[in-house]
Image (cartoon, rainbow over all chains, first blue to last red; front, side):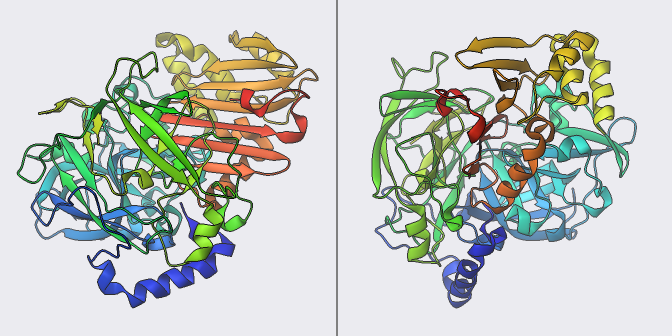
Amino acid sequence: MNCARVVPMKTRHVFVLAALLMSLAACGGKSTLSSGGNTSPIAGSASNVATAVVNAGPSGDVNTMFTSVTICAPGSTSNCQTIDNIEIDTGSSGLRILASALTANLPIQTDGSGASLAECTQFVSSYSWGPVALADVTIASETAASLPVQIIGDSNFATVPAACASTGSEEDTVQAFGANGILGIATEAQDCGTDCAQSAAYGFYYACTTASNCVPVTLGTASQLQNPVTYFATDNNGVIIELPSVTATGAESLTGALVFGIDTESNNASSNTATVLPVQVGTGYLTVSLNGTSYSQSFLDTGSNGYYFTDSALTQCTDSDASGFYCPSSTTSFSAIACAYQDSGSCTGVAQETFSFSIANADTLFASNAAYTAFPTLGGSFPTASTVDLGLPFFFGRNVYEAFENKSTSKGSGPYYAF
Amino acid sequence: MLSTRASMIRRLAPAITLAVSAPLWVTTAQAALGAPYASIAGDQATLGASIKATAHAGYTVHELTLPSGTVVREFSAVNGTVFAVAWNGPSKPNLSQLLGNYFNDFVTTAQTTPGGRNHVNLSRSDLVIQAGGHMRAFFGRAYLVGSVPAGVSSDELR
């Protein structure tokens, strides 16, 4: 979400910036809740708790969650820096930093023949291009040592391969990316996994003999980008995302917690009322039953800024400010069931949890308070009829447990979500 | 660069059964959204590629499976015009080639829509583009509103 690039949105961003300047204290850690908070408690400061905030970020986004990370060259205690405005994304794996936000000098990784490794990171609408480096990454007080990370938009790798550029819009600057980096904590341990170890056809990894001569290569899983949490020495089996609830009209900003580990510390015990929903390995799919239809390729994704699903009864917004979102004439409520993944795609015979949500008119929401960045009722259409994308609003007001693949917890093995 | 990537895939071809369709996809003047589909017959014969075609009332779906496992569907009308394309799979296809003249609309929408990295929603009177998903699971479709055959619902174009 990069509202700042929409010309008509600029007025809105001025308000957002002004509001932020006037409330720096609030942005520093105090929640600006306009309602009674989470029904579940939000963890306080601890060695395994990173602060998670929802605010406009560097380019005026809505429903985007950020944290900060400290990066050091491997083994160094001086070649380090702390970087804020790092988006927390459960829809991807790996830590990626925009080169313009990076001052620490990190070693670029090479393949067996000495060629530099680079990645064309594919997002739905865009790509981000840059080399793979190693770093010691500390979040809260947990460290991932010698973690492969991507440096996006590195000027030493200025030539984007044509096959990469043909996949979408380029997001190689902070303004375009809407963050100083992205912390990918999907259920998958790597961003590509065994697929990219066996075939270069996925177009993720490249070997560069010069800055302008990069060819697709296979890359072993150990060298690929990794979910950083899985590299922690402890508290590495999953995370809990804890955000406050938000009133229907929205909130200026939110402060919550990204808690590392499930049932590994006194502050991350899994709730007895949370239903464990195993998801498909590799895709994170579960099934959502909505209006009598089973959407068998559904998923939870903090990197999506709304609820995305096909509903022809919901009107599309026409105003450019809210382009791409739903704009129903009146707020529409939905009752849905999230179910554990099974190949049949049905909810029969598997664990399930009922939840409800609403879709409001995005144009009205945005117009009502230009300084707001957290909206619980944003939604938009999805290209297929098999997915309900439970974006960041789904996480408002409920603690969501996410267990990683190949990791065990007291509630079972990952990958699963529980809420 | 396309030829570089294609040669890479060709080297892999003996080991990957599906790779036979890859050179077709990445190197030829592929039928793209709004273009005639006729050219693909020649490509198909030359390269020995297999494409699964399914006839529906008013249109034909040509389904290509890429080496990555990503599936691309092209919808051609009786007059041969590709009026819709759709994709899903673990990596994105060459959208520049697939969308042809409309790739710029995809890029511009991605840059200007408040839909984020994980969404594209363009709903114009002449063109609809939708994309969604996340890493390892990409979905998208595009269709030319005015070229959709009479009686065909947009719900079928996925």
